[in-house]
Length: 362
Image (cartoon, rainbow, N blue to C red; front, side):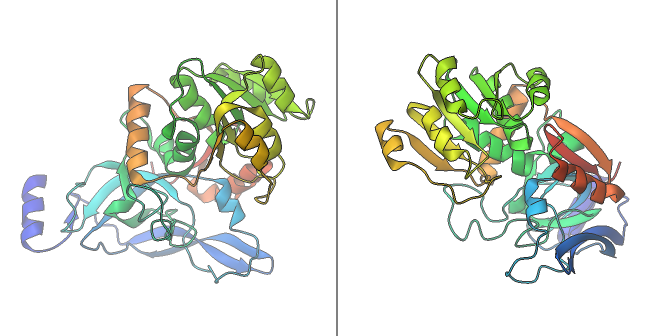
């Protein structure tokens, strides 16, 4: 029956609809301007129409990222009022445009962070449209995305797990193994226990790397042992933690350093590197204007990569790795859709390990 419907729809030049899908309205969360910046506001609108090269997705889960918080303070850029929030969704395809060939109704999919970055190195044009920031995001019952902005969800993952992959998962992949897969026994130094860091731990461990993890919490270091075996350093009690990295590695240092701290951590990240090592700069929890020592990098013949998520092709490679190694994303807590404010508050608390997810539809 579904095949007959697809043929008929193609003949009529109409989008292909999943059998029984007749929703006309969708809940959605948008940015609302306030005196101090923006807040998230729940509203409602019509289910969007599907273009020739677009797919309509029934959203099941949406994962939060620190970037969602970074968009809330006031800035001097263009007014973002009314823009749908969040970038990471998982759900089911319920309709496809007549020009779509990669997906059919019923497919389990995720969004991708960038709309135009399908493959190859980044360019200004490829990085121009990022969901929830420069274009509408995905926190709604139904969203329409270009077919280049959608990827198959890895087999064996729940909707909640799959929703964590578009930003944090792919960033952790590119920072740890996506650009340079560690050899067995290589040393990977990872900062923190947030979503990106936990993914980097999982990917590095699956590749056979030895992991050193830094955190301000002994309790988090202990809890993270259940995710992947590691040697832990509390950077509050060991402020010059780069020296401890060298001690633990008999002077070798880390072959890969995943830096999420930014301004306050870059200097010691460089000191922690091995000769010929790779520094992956992911974020700037303490600010983005840190200083890198050119002399120290040159002296170690080290590589530095700025990590800004990745392409759709990178996502597909990551998905294959996840399936091959039977990995499951770490979700700290799941909130109902309507409790998005509580979820944002929990995100801001920094009390979590891994990811925070909103369950949009059962």
